[in-house]
Image 1 (tube, rainbow, N blue to C red):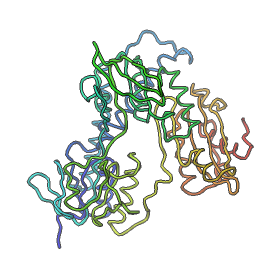
Image 2 (tube, rainbow, N blue to C red; image 1 turned 30 degrees about the vertical axis):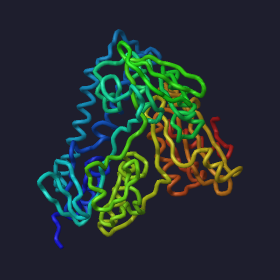
Image 3 (cartoon, helix red, strand yellow; image 1 turned 90 degrees about the horizontal axis):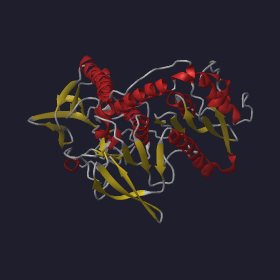
Length: 463
């Protein structure tokens, strides 16, 4: 049987466009179906625009702290329109770049909503596209929990509305202390908003290493953020100029008045209109495609699923890795299998937080007393002191017998870049000796990685 294309990709976000380009580079005839803009959530309303906002805030912080570096700055003001213009410029540039890459690699871009008619047919409006293989990469959208008085709209936001703010709110309650809630909370707090974060779990970043989560919270409090942990928003009501939010923490109840409420409770898979039921692709009650095997095949073998629409971690870099696995398998050149054991997780506040591998609690549960912890603070690092970022630490978790790296957790300057070294170590089963023996340049922040690793053996030089 002949098909219009070898591979049809539904969804043009990080996973989808990555898969389309890679398949085309490997010789496949490829079509990419996208109902909105290529780049998906990440480029348009996620990773990239939020980091642009955080970069703008970083410049503001530098201006405020200029005197500490011998640079006295006079009057300054925050130009929200200017911030939004910069954000749009970066986003549009990257989206245009992706479109150009698709064209360069001869990927046909089809605009519209793609629906599965059968296991080899995608319907886009009046067009029927047949494909030997199909990759589902439809991504996710902000999750919303039903709370009386907090229907989305007006002064109740998701991350989408928060990105498009036209003025800095005087006050804000954020529901959720995951990466999304913390990054927006830090952005608005540094812009002058009074921010209160409400988190149901007993720590911010509930999945993170407890010690590093507490360290990050300490610095975010200094930055102006307030936290209510082990608490939940039960309802809200309109007041003049905003909302009165009712919060329950144990047996205590409290109200907080604010101008805006931001719901940052995670994301949910996008599957509506996709036609999964008709072709037999299985999904759960949250709309996530289940039963992807080690090569990202769904319950229908020629249909693959990658990115946020699956049950894996909702991170752009995970979608990229899954795209590689799926396309290699489709093209008959399987090199890698799905592997979630070494996924770096990052938070881009100031200081930053990053982690990979086991937390200390997870390591102790598995290895007991054979767990070894090494720590080294940025306060002892010359580069960090010079740049004014001497806060936080790096924590390395290993085991006694072989010195294998089990995990690494960081709070401090540029740790979202530094974590990659320990991800490589973890994935390749390196020992602490091998990390220590690797020559780290001086003066750099990377020296802290080496010193923390040395500390697992009790031989950190500068501690």
